[in-house]
Figure (cartoon, rainbow, N blue to C red):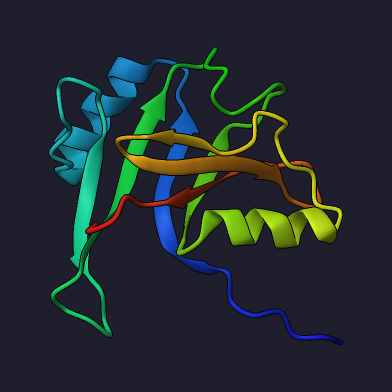
Length: 134
């Protein structure tokens, strides 16, 4: 079996649908002490790169409303966001391998570059290339 070069560099975020988003956020804040941002109801777990401790990163935690369209169509309750170093190269390689890629393609924002794919069981996955310096 051919070995594929590592494409994912870490977890960028864990997202899930909550039946009652505000109640779920309150539960996580009260019982697990998550310091949720009141502006968007999520938080960032900040960390440093093991090979380069000066390089900072974060993993996002966020509860979404049950009717969110962010996870794509269907009843998928969770979505994982994976960090990648070069989104364009990863998407090109996945395309050659026949992986489903959201036709929206790569979207860029102040938070970096994003693209969505589906795994072998049809679960939507978010790929994220953080902006330079983060």
